[in-house]
Image 1 (cartoon, helix red, strand yellow):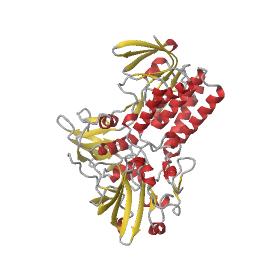
Image 2 (tube, one colour):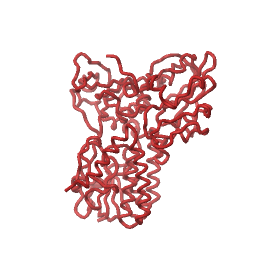
Image 3 (spheres, rainbow over the protein chains, first blue to last red):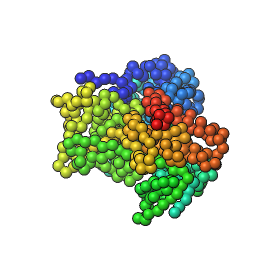
Length: 171
Length: 364
């Protein structure tokens, strides 16, 4: 039996679902510099992302079940929205030559250290490539959600969305 | 005998919100709760809540609990803990036990905010140590800081199953799989995505065939289900696990409402038999109100709004608010409640609540 694709069957959005939503930036925009990628595909009552964006680049409006709409021209890829999303569904992506960067929310201890080489995983948790931790932001404003940026080969830009959880020291 | 304007039974999100709202209006409120600590399930919600700014979206649940407790304290609400209410008698006389002694409390208004309890599931091996409710596991990790096991298999893909799986991993456990009997995931996709990214497989159309273990859970055998919910032989899978968490729905805790004599209506999407209430959250018994999961299982944000609604309505009925002020406040709350009950996940609950409110008019 082949597994049915899509968020309600697999628990993560399919490529087709991601193409249809208004929160994902265009390929052209991604080439121009860091930009938010809002992978919110279900109409749930939620809108903190709208308020979090200091540039007014995300709109939800009324009803609050609307999918967030990204204004890719206004977005500068600052990443403020990443930790604001209760669904941990916002990422910031950028590409430069052979390298790409992906920023994502991370709520597991221990956190990696800057400069660490780590396994990067896709939406299904599959280890797809090694990557280098460039930044870890822990702001009180983020309320314990760390925002991690990894550098990966550009070909994995659309796939990498987190890192493999690190072993706990006491286990 | 103790006296109060309003007696709230249950110090969870609905009960505390109700108490705060009524006390703000000037009412003397007493909250009774059988637990040793107030807050209900709020203090184990370590994730950021959904909703809008008015629902305190983006704030972690336990912080909302802290804020509610601070408000109740500031407003002089009396919260009696370790107080098990065992009876509601004529003229709104409440009997409860605290410190091993009987007490009575007479109130002008009673608000039942008793919440809900976890459903169980029967299968071979379900009585082995290591099988527990997902909510129980959540209490262990987030309140008591005890890991129930190292390798967890989660049953049920509603938001409880998805969120508790995530939190078990945050606490240091591994979740070997999440299974769901229905052909699709029940909870929010974003919650499912979090655990998929962390490497947890989700198997839909799958249930537990049996648990293997001598004195505790050692191995779980799952099996796929066909469209008629029948097990498909040959599709068994074995998972090594020491803990099985059941997140298979909740049922409203309605005993006190039955005892008091409230009329009920059967609405399966809300968790079964639920007390009928009007748009003020008042039941068919004058002066007895309900709020939160007892009125139908939803989530903390709607429980808090229902609590506020009951609080405003009680205060109005006792003369602390005039009709116009009360209407204004109630409309604001209803707008926020309606917002939480929209979209593909909320629409069913919106219709169910409508049916519950309309049921009152259909009583003979």
